[in-house]
Image: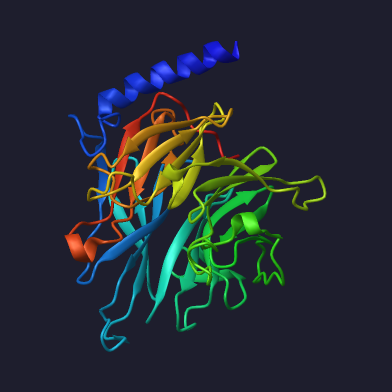
Length: 356
């Protein structure tokens, strides 16, 4: 029976992806292309879309950072970074819900939705410390209220809710933080989990280990899965009955997963993974993969032309979009190539795993 289900999923997925052009050969894309849901302005010095999540009504919420000017020679910033939260309705109309000053080196990252459809976004200051690191809740008036504060040196990135608690990957220290979001501000004193399997950098080539470690995060039952960008791996961690972490284990490590970023589960237990870069060396670059429950890695798209530093995959939540995968293109190198962040949609013939 398991073999039949696997064959059925593979056949249905292949047909659906061929119809959208996602199964094109590396570096090429066949027509028709995956649909474009929304495109965001590039800004004078580039912009970057990092986080995305869907609420129960099918609306997508996106975090966007518009970069300020940075003079590499003088190491000075002439303009501030600006963070924005956008809502993209099921009809593809988009509206900006929040605009905040992140001067001079702040950025917005992961986005998550709680059971009450409230929106949360991670914020990280890359150098100055003027933007407090942690997680913020979007308020009705367009302001962002900090609900989780993390210590200096932490790099909050991916965020996800599970059993009423918020889990936060820390790309800088190779950790996962956990906090209960209440009326006040949570200040966890130590990570829920810190492990070498989640650490940034490759000791063989980067003794400073200053790269990107734990990145994307997703739950399936009482197990949390974390993508680790620098080490091209996915790590699984059980959540014990008392809330403590079990033993972390690598369930997949493959060269294709270098720069692994956002992750999302489908209803059959497949884990969809975006990678910021592909394997062919073309530009724009990016990869999309599906990790099967048996740890088989399927290449969905490898530098197909429509992926541009993809950061987050999100399944639709409405009856008509449950088998649609929305992929956020971060366009990190937009200042160099003139591209803009956008959202693409793929019909993948497999429904997403409900978050609640």
